[in-house]
Length: 266
Length: 253
Image 1 (cartoon, rainbow over the protein chains, first blue to last red):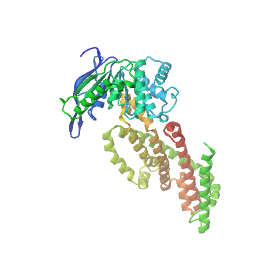
Image 2: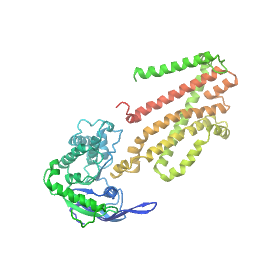
Image 3: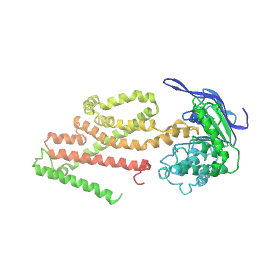
Image 4: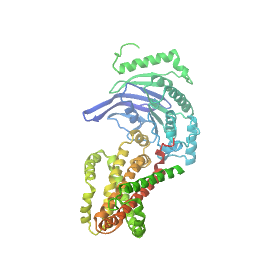
């Protein structure tokens, strides 16, 4: 265990108990995220990626191995994570502003009510939802709901931001919009993040490290570091370097799916 | 409320009354076969004091039964909504209980608590109306998407916080849907007991005395009075729903 890392996952094994016996989902999972780092996790469908997010959030305790955040072993949910899912799960009976403020009603906070509201308004403005504070979720489009959900995940300045395919259900243009918003948010509100995704372009555009998980039971199969090229724009996705990275990742996914043997070159 | 929302139902009511009057007139039915709307005002004029006192008796006992049904139905729904085991254990019992026609339970209850007229009337109103509430609350709670729970649990929220902040408000639309059904059911329960139990209280008893005295217009007048009370309670529930679960209404979007 190194203290430089905010999140350290070592030797994690986990199985779900089902009617037909234990179903192993994770076996030999290793993952480290330095403070301020942003790691994307990709892998075949159903390989246990969402289980991983629940481990980091403390919603699930692994059968073996350990999950540490800031060196402390996670054994129960802690208030220092923010989560956003593919389903934005906003509360329909609250306004957007009240939705964003929800975590502050639960976690211990030093912010006064007015300060919390100021912060919520600032975050909403940052993701381009200025003027929608008093709307209901049902009045917003899918992409806007997802942006509000992101603000809710960040309002209490969590140590770890967990994003479980947050852009998965959006159309391609909205998704690219949100990618750029993510960069803007990260610049203004630095966070340490884990992003679960199915989209390889998304992973190399947003993260500074991409971890490929093997098929079930999942272990860490491959780690790709994304070189720091300063401010990223969508043009970066159309460079030869990006094409090489995408090829490598796609090959690794095919290996994970068991379609090609591991030794075949990319 | 717009003018449209008032005159459309009023017009529908008038058309219904005219059609009823016309039917009786065309068929030439005597009042003991079917009373016409024009036979009712004399009945109301003659017995208006009885209508007021007995209407009140019926109304408060129905509301008391309904309140009990809300408390008990919600509690039962919560138990079944949160625990799979309790759901598996209680559903067959509950369905069986609800399948028993309450008309057959009325004489049993009347004998069991003989003399406690208010109590056994409220009890039947309660027994007949808690089922939809329990089922809707349990379904509302058990179908809560896991992400809602995860969002709050990951922040360290307790089960009761999750219930008050998310599960309860999210279940309100289903709850009010069930309450609308329960309101009318509770009236049926109250009147079953009032008709069967010989205490001479409530609109049910007034109906029964109309039957005994072959006062057919009075019987029809009671039915209409019951319908009016039912409509009144129903719209009170609608107003409560607008206040507490108005967010779920998408019709104005």
